[in-house]
Length: 511
Image 1 (cartoon, one colour):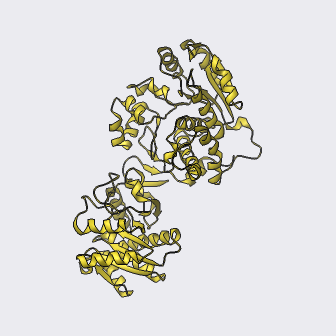
Image 2 (cartoon, one colour):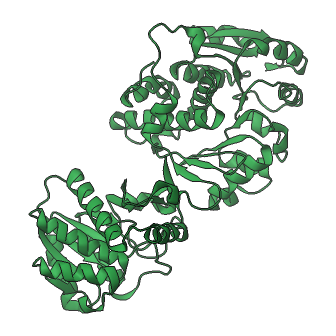
């Protein structure tokens, strides 16, 4: 997993690395080398590059990158937002090295320089943005704002050094005019702007370059914030042994559905089976069994006493007894929140079985997250999280990281706060950020499929936070695999469930 740091934490890691014997100039050189390697890999056809450098260390990274690109045979047009003589320290050293390599440093302090930059960009294959990095604290104005506007209007692809210029590293927001990058190469660790919207949309694809800071120095302070990688999911989901059988991959109960909402139960079970659950049984109102079997004969059913098309609260004792034969359960999709259903759910929460609580299992206990304490996974969307915490949805969305941590702490459960860049939070404060997904997932039943996938992984014995992070990753990747043919709308949730195996296969995992 990739550490996600604040600007302050990143500076502390830099200082610690330098204090431990890694020269600052070496860190800058490594950053530039990582930037150039990522650029060459992403854009193998580029020959001409315009490089725009700011006044600080981010500009120093750009100066070093310009020299390395020139050494690789690129035609480089190099621009500095201030006179080259103003550079100091490692940036000053790299300005001198660039001149020694035969590069001309064109100052952008006047309108003539800005016109020259626009011409150079027009003649280039792409742009390297090394204007401003993690230290930016105020909106860009004057010449800096005009330069950013010229880069954005050019139509050329942009590779940003560490963060797109004009973006607040910590807030995850553009704080004024900001570069729209197609590729951002983060140095040492990801920053919050790389993983949280709306800034994430300005970063394009993200690459994280190892610049020589020891991993132990990149953990930051306090509970970790980590970006999930494909390699993590592969590690969580090893290939199945050739002699395995269905009992090896978990017995999952799905307690879901009511009259008019039986589809939620079906989609949850389908998601679980497509995620690899060995055996799935749908616990539902007895009158719904035929519908479930007709739609998904691969699942089994357990009909329970009902009242007006919903599971009756009197069914709790029977359900609790039957659940002893299972490894985990998903509870809530489509159950409703009638009084009897809430009484049923409250009894169900006394079970020691690992539970994935979704949808109405969350809505039933608005304002009382403590009822979930134990081996639980909660999967709220922002509105459900707001109801659990007794705040507005706007407050949740204003600081999703804080909200996820707060709900996990107050509930004592692992929490998946769904949405763009879904967050898996543990009661101890660690948060795993999901990098996959597409607007295509904004469709009815998508969350049911996700709940089923989480349940499948929990049932096979995975730790709740790993099961949740892996399921969120594959759910998002499945959506991405379908976006190529469907675009950003029109997905049916059943199609999403059916794409889960292909998404997993694409990671290199089997079974």
